[in-house]
Image (cartoon, rainbow over all chains, first blue to last red; front, top):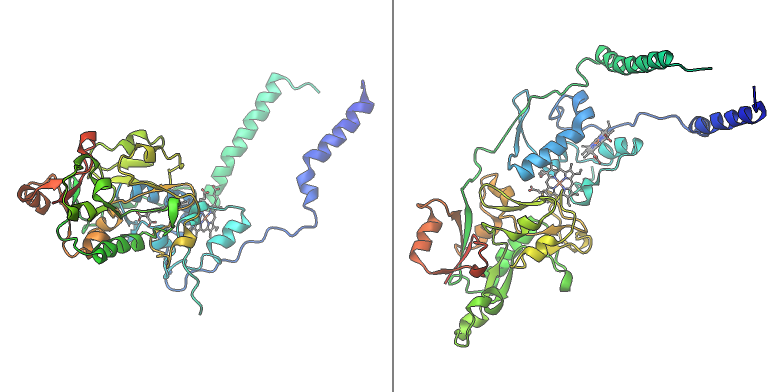
Amino acid sequence: MYDGNKIIPGLVIFLGLITFPFWYNIGSAAYEKPQLKLPEIEKECVEPKDWIRAEHMQLLDDWRDLAVRDNTRLYVNQAGKSFDMSLSKTCMSSRCHANKAEFCDRCHDALAVSPYCWDCHVEPPIVEE
Amino acid sequence: MALNRRSFLKAAGLTTLAGLGGHAAMELLAPGALEAAQPAQVGAYPEALTAKRWAMLIDTEKFTSAELYQKCIDACHKTHNVPTIPGKQEVKWLWTERYAGTFPEQQHALVPEKVKHQPFLLLCNHCDDPPCVRVCPTKATFKRADGIVMMDMHRCIGCRYCMAGCPYGARSFNFRDPRPFVENIDEHYPTRMKGVVEKCTFCEDRLAKGQLPACVEVSEGALIFGDLADEDSEVRRILRERYSLRRKPSLGTNPSVFYLI
């Protein structure tokens, strides 16, 4: 092989760099599934749990456009139950996820997502139990 | 170690298969999880108040006390978490102004003293031809089919073209985070954030649920709200009977707010 003494160290350095994320993380705690606190009163979400977990951001995005731009504020799910298309009044209501810190935030923090909605939408005050 | 065309295509094909296979595996393990659980239905509340063109009449004869003005302003600003910031960074949806500022085109030396010093209630005029909507680059402000000039806070980029476009000064910019300036934040309505423009929305969120605008509700009959396109509506009846003014008519914006004189 021509120039083997340059190519081989080059390859070693390259491999070292490209696998950096793996060995950098050695020893640090593995990802833990966040422990979420589910609502105590309401047991059923607007849509099935699996779907809402994957699609809630899309649903909220649709809701805000429908409510604010199309003046359409009533949502009827497949089971025929109706909801106000509102982040504060439905999702975060005292019957549901008023405990933002131990539900939305726990998951978002674990996944490094930080929705900017709370710059305006009011986080419900924590009620002491 | 030559990678010829043939082996490249093979590798590429395999990677594609792996990608598709991922989806298939997901389907096998958690059927339906990737598909939408819809179709849900959406619609308006049955009790919603609707109109072809919403309009407001301000009966200046009934506004005899400063308390009544303040009552309307407080009702508005409380329901919408409008901050109270003194000075030039003021944010307002509903406010008062003297005759000279309200009807600059109607000024002359002989306007009665009483009128000259009387405050008038000001708000967004919900123009039929709104200049703010024309200049907004993101369609954050737009005119609805029922005439309401609406603000979509989610799209506002804070360029303030609309403020330059509005001839009525109806729009306020959030120069800073408004939250510290809102007493008792109502969690049912979002505040705004630094860098967006806001204004009166004719309480479209209340109309959608069958309620009149907050200011109209507390105005003791001094504010009348209704459909300007409906000949039999109360607003049309009153406009037939009484003399009214609109602000800066020569601009051709065609406001939906009328001042009964």
